[in-house]
Length: 151
Image 1 (cartoon, rainbow, N blue to C red):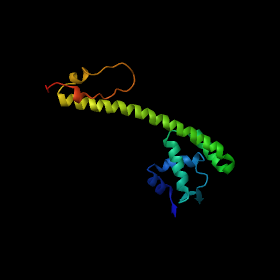
Image 2: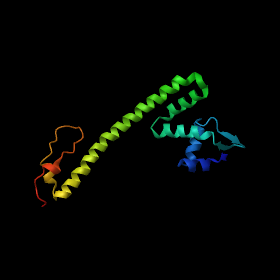
Image 3: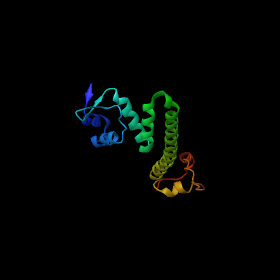
């Protein structure tokens, strides 16, 4: 089946101008043109998913271009392409680790406020907490230990 740039953009959730930019940057080397109009086919979607993935995980356009150029070389560039993907996976893993770190802090704050609301005061929670590092706060088992009444 064939698709216009507008149809593909809608399917990908991006603007047609983004696909035009990809084309201008030579990131769509196998997309057909008929009378100057880009025609996408089913076979192009795998490539579009890879481009979207690389872009959305923060790979710079210069590296995406390099990946595209290497892909056009075929099997002789397998190791170089693998190294680019491996490096990007490491970058994404670092992002995930950082987000998990932040999520621990948000989980703690969620617990903190729920507990303070439950007891009617954050002083109850603060009295049981010791701040001594930049590591995310740990949720203590205060419910069992708190022997206070609601204010």
